Length: 490
Ligand SMILES: [Fe+2]
Image 1 (cartoon, rainbow, N blue to C red):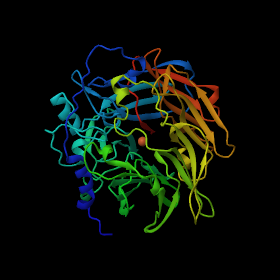
Image 2: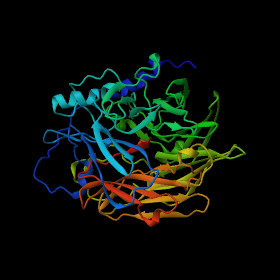
Image 3: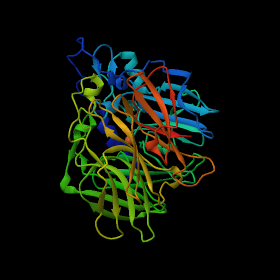
């Protein structure tokens, strides 16, 4: 492999170092703010809590002990009218819901990044990003200068990391949520990108990717948090890689035909949809990265996979929320941020799909017709054969959010759904295995719901085996915090 770190980082730095015109919106007039805008409004600079949540429904499950950590953008507007250019570019705020002895305590803190410090001091949007052009006065020397640290979180060996995708993971105190700074896995990997979708084997080993242009770095991290290996791959084209998949034996780099063809900010404007390229899969042996094979299927766009597994004959199955074309491109989420959303775009329909990759020949798609996002699986079975995928479903006609939580069973083909209704906005739910159990049905599902009637964030717990029965319990904050993307249970 001849790719060097300098070559690798060059692509990212180039993508983020051009500066463009700042936003000059003509807004600021008095307007009616819709109730759902609560999910896209700036969080207070000092954060939230620690504050106890109130149990407002049901009984706290015995044995549910741990921390739900989540991350998402929480600053969208500077001054009166200086908005970021895309929902994906708001400063990350990490939420911690500490659950024990039937009590739940919420803490929320912004990740104190370089980007945030510069923008708070200037009181305006400065950094370029996924969909934000940035200010011409903001010089960018490397990816962490514009790192929003806003996409997900990971806990490894007790260390909490706020994840973005084009720069470093940012270490935080797991209790206070104080920011420590960029994580350096190895000196020669300083500022190397670290995707927001690491994959954890049941034994605790973590795999993740660094993506810059067509170059893909592979991290293998022990459950002790020590980097075991870092390798380099090449996927041939600069596909947008936000998520990927892993089986017990293989890494699967999913090369969608949404391709970066111009390095200029904002990043997303350099991407072109090339469906004629199809959807390619680079399958890499975890024990020997030089052992690779390719498969191809029909063109699809995607953000998220559930997970993958491999059958005895080597057939690989991956579940993912697939789209016929890319969504949330240029200007993505901008109407939501401004409180001006006019209704659902008909192209934003996903389909929970199982991608079946045989040992030889093309991949085929098994589509469920289930329009959902944020697919999640039982962490005990990540990379292994399983039945269940939980996901957020039921796109609302009245808000930019979703109303339902579903569990799809791949064996029976049945989907079990609970619909909260149009006055609630449902976020990602995570599997939490019940103590002493082994079956994936023996799990709770835990996640937040933004309640527009009470103007609160509610933490809901379901029994994974009976989602349509409704929540087992609900804890409610005295306030709401912005909608987030992803979380982890630790
Ligand atoms: Fe994601």
